[in-house]
Amino acid sequence: MDQKKLKLRKAIRGYLDKDRSRLIPEGEIVEPTSIIIDGRIRVHWSGSKEGLGFLMVDQNELESWADPI
View 1 (cartoon, rainbow, N blue to C red):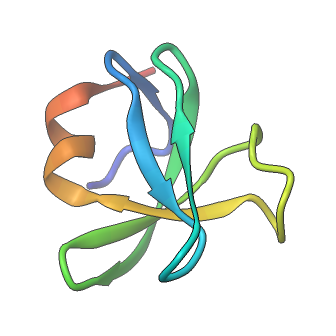
View 2 (view 1 turned 180 degrees about the vertical axis):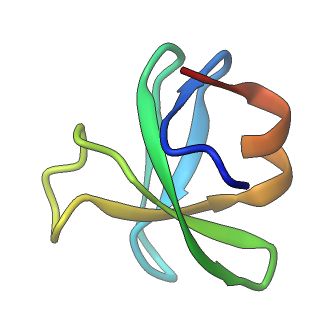
């Protein structure tokens, strides 16, 4: 994905690590990075209060449920 910022049309699950995840609500803005591991892409979401705000999301879900802004 080459877009700098994407707006979610549907909520998606973002994974902090193997055991922890957060729901990123519909309408939120995320910024994809170039890091892709096992079908998940790393995104920055300002709504995340852990670490630096990076989560891993399913790449197919992100491509299906987000629009460039």
